[in-house]
Image 1: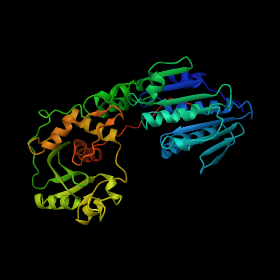
Image 2 (image 1 turned 90 degrees about the horizontal axis):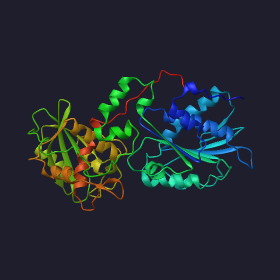
Image 3 (image 1 turned 180 degrees about the vertical axis):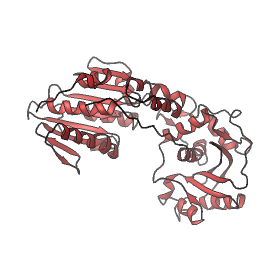
Image 4 (image 1 turned 30 degrees about the horizontal axis):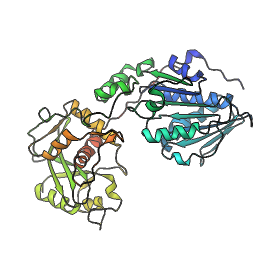
Length: 417
């Protein structure tokens, strides 16, 4: 079998990544720049050419953030690629291992680095290195590089959209080392993208994220206030629940301090119009029935309230709410903190989010004071129930459910092998 890559099928940043022979190579770019596409081709090239000096075959790991992404972004398209070039292969779905006459590739996720054991690797590739945070990303990197001993040309390569000063910055961004090749690319470097997709990216993300998610730059996402667009004067509204309003209530559960955030929708905006703190979930139900007996209510709770660790230790918190006849809008797990923060910041920046500061003093203070934890790179967490992080958690659950940041899909018109 003869494999040929044609330069005309790729963009310059993709070619540089594909043909890099550096010990460590990284492609840092905005969304839609073709990272995952060229990542699969890089894996194929290394699989066919980077052989063990002992076995004469390649041995590689491919690592994605989650199992679903491993299947969707790598295994399925890679197997299609093998079929396209008519390379015979076997696939063990249980172990997520692909085997050909050239060697084998095993898939892992970044969620459990400790499970990555054994192996004398000839190559290791990580897609979306920054997705699971600084600590996990660095541990995955160390697991990989510690096992790259299967050939004299063993290589580590990674792609990612930068998530602030996380793992990619720590490994590749501080100072490019002599054994590294670091390639930066913008979303707009993919000339086949529809302009509408690019325009939608600009509309989708708060302006502080444009440099990272479109221009592929390392930017500080964890400095100053978490809700950097909040202004108590600019965002003040006099809204109150009116007859016929559906109340959208964000609910955070804590023993001794269950925070409720009451929203109403006004056109394409969300107005935070009431708040309360109750000692347990039973009191939350009593409170809403007493205050708003004639309104329709939808709760957007902390999803961990389904796990049987209720504030009254007898029923699950969500079970108490549904048992009282209220609707629930929640997935099995909470949205990522960054997704909740980004969705809320976008609404604030666009003036599509308001707060009645007179009726919601706890939330007003929380949005002003909530800062980033420089140690973890996440919003500060406090041990005491009813702290500012409980207010902002409760307030962001409905926002991310009703106005999520959905990264637009893109299509390409250029043939890319």
